[in-house]
Amino acid sequence: MPNHELDDLSHRSREIGPLPVVHHFFERLGLDELLATYVPERKLGRQTSLAYSKTLAVMVANILTSREPLYAVPDWLRRRVVEHVGLADGDVELINDDRIGRALDRVYETDPASLMTAVVMRAVKEFAIDMSQVHSDTTTVTFSGAYEGQKDKAALSRPPLITFGHNKDHRPDLKQLVYALVVSADGAVPVHYKTYDGNKSDDKTHIEAWNAIRAIAGRPDFFYVADSKLCTRENMGFIAAQGGLFLTVLPRSRQEDDVFRAYIQDHPVPWQEVRRIPDDDSDKPDHVHEAFEPDAKSVEGYRVVWYRSSVKARIDEKRRSDRIARAKMRIENLEQRTGAHQFRSVEAAQKAADKVLQDEGAQLWLRVQIRASEVHDYKQTSPGQPGKDTKYRRIDIPVLFFEVTETAEAIVADAKCDGLFAMVTNHTQLDPKGLLAEYKYQPFLEKRNEQLKSVMAIAPVFLQKPERVAALLFLYFLAVLVFALIEREARRAMARDGIEALPLYPESRMCKAPTCDGILQAFEGIRKTDLLDGAGTIVKAFYDPLSPVAIHLLKLLHVSRKAYQE
Image 1 (cartoon, rainbow, N blue to C red):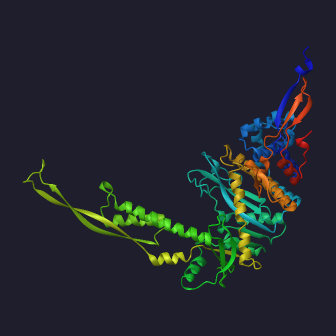
Image 2 (cartoon, rainbow, N blue to C red; image 1 turned 180 degrees about the horizontal axis):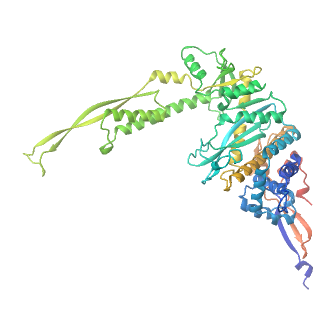
Image 3 (spheres, one colour; image 1 turned 135 degrees about the horizontal axis):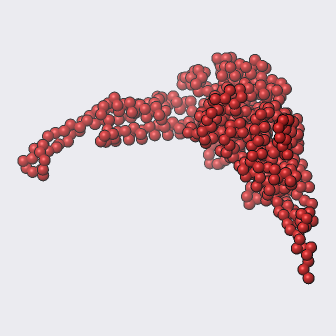
């Protein structure tokens, strides 16, 4: 006989994935509580049936684990065990792109800067982040679309202006925002961010960022490291006057750069090796840095330390050779012009050649002289087939020859400067070796910006309202913060337990420095299957088994296995 009880059973399978890991860090940050405090419900008008804070937490979790566009977030939720993002099953149907949009509006209406400070201060305290040194840099977030009408709004009330500027994605045809980020030198944890108008100059962002870090650190004497845009009289003077420390790269446009490059043409420099790293390819030479600190200070009175990098020297030499070769090839093409494209005067040819040198940046190394000459041709004086009585007239055709010569002295002088760069600082305790070591942490900040664009796919942003764009970029900052904390905790735990590597790469290949996306990937596809009776009540739950590396990661991160088992 048929078993009618079995006929009433059904099953439902949903993915757990890495959400419990993400939620564990949300709890340590107190993110849900902070969101509820700083993004409160509206007191007037229709009350929402789902708190803004819960919607925003869902968005941060989505950015970290899936990166769906706003309209796809509801479907993403339906395929997950939503209790691990702080929702009940009934809340899933309340999430849609319109509700997400209103939550973003609410973020913009409130004070995201205060929320950011509160979250960062909680992270610094909870995870014991060392704030004695921070690194600052900017990137650009690129947009497609008109985004018109922003300039019509009051400057103080409008969101950052999406407009054209110096695009670091090499897309000058598209509009952008400037995204400024500051990270700690302890795990590259983001501790401050702000978006600016797309045409904002980088050198105008540092004082505001420094003041924000001072409020978080609670003291001014932290070490602020940034690229050459920090090297202005205003920026350095402000930090020094407040009792802060800074380190920045000396721009090539500064007077000190010209003076030193002229000096080394005729004077020996007592370089001292301060850094040597073997190349990954054993057949190639080591990467070597040498340093020299002259007695001369910057025009503002700060230390200037000069460095010579073997890698940069090879790059500079190749760049010069490539520019010379390209310039020669283009000038050769000018000489071979014929017909209507042929130059009719020496002046026109000289102007074209000079433009090539300027375009290629080779005007210091090449000289072009135009020499005019003539070639002769003969043409019949009358039509028809030529014969013994045919008469000809001589035609003089002007020809221009482009004589290209290398300025050997300039090339030799320029080669003496290959690999050079300088840094400016008011730090008196660190020697040149120590300063270089601190600056070499800057690529970890650049990696955070790279992860923002590649791993988290911040661009393009499919939003039309600039206010919502600004709010969404804030959620991306929160996601990068959690991303960095997960990565930092895993690496610290590995160092504490003496673990050199984990099998996180495909084919279980070993990874010495796990990134957050590699860690979360270890939990992808893990599902929970519920056996349901006719009333929809769970009769029994079945869980996919965890891999050994996933179990190990849970232990390292102190995440409970309860979410992955009955």
